Image (tube, rainbow, N blue to C red; front, top):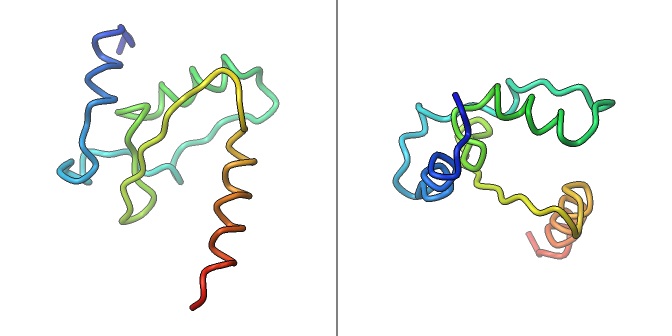
Length: 89
C-alpha cells in the first residue's frame, strides 16, 4: 500500500473513541531491527501495520504522532513512567 498524503491524512483522522479495535494491528506483533537507520525503521513499521498512527496494545487503542525533532519515544516513555510513579494509588 502506498502512503500518499491523502492516505496518511485518512489514517491520522481515525478517532480512537470509535475505531473498531479488531481492525488495528497489535504493536506487540511488529518487529523492527533497531540497528537500521530511522527511515528504514519507519518503512518497516509502515509495512507491518494497517495504520501508522492508530494501533493497539492488547485491549488498548493507541494513537501516535511523528516529529522530526524533539524528544524521542524513550524520553516520552520515561516522562510517562515518572508521572505514573507520582500518582497516589
